[in-house]
View 1 (cartoon, rainbow, N blue to C red):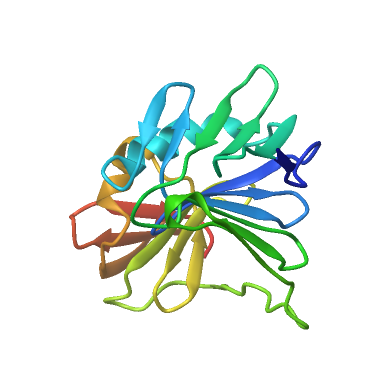
View 2 (cartoon, one colour):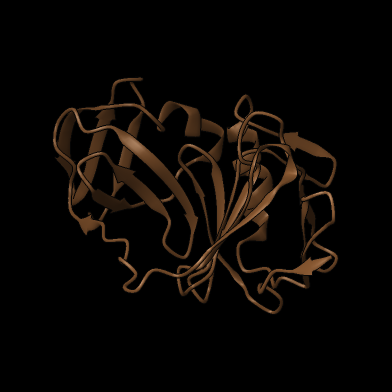
Length: 198
């Protein structure tokens, strides 16, 4: 078994864009295309259920993080949960990116690949502010930096109702209204997102 350097790190955010990902307090991330969390199998067909299942891990401390000889990534959070991402036949199963940018990923079939840290790591930068009309919601984040990131690289801080997250992700902004200091973004699904600060 190989250890991944997550032990004693705290989950800061859970993100959903194309895959689910955990962001830790040192800036490292784990992206997951398919995972089992305490008996619930999550893949591209039930990502929103996966977001709800991972949400309670915000603030949890990682107790173990290992890669098995078959290529599965197993992450434990004490008594709170165990995540297992087994290799997939057709796509990458998981990707760990250290705070330095060095990456370990599980290729289709379970082969593990290592990528060195880039000379200069580009920081993710989302500008606060309201999105443009027709901008698409490309990421939902829950946790310390909870909010919605849009295709025009704007991010609004808000708490997304996880039962309604499917009405937010990949939907476009149709109208923006301001009511009593609250920004109301109407999405193409008809759902209205409310945020007091962009």
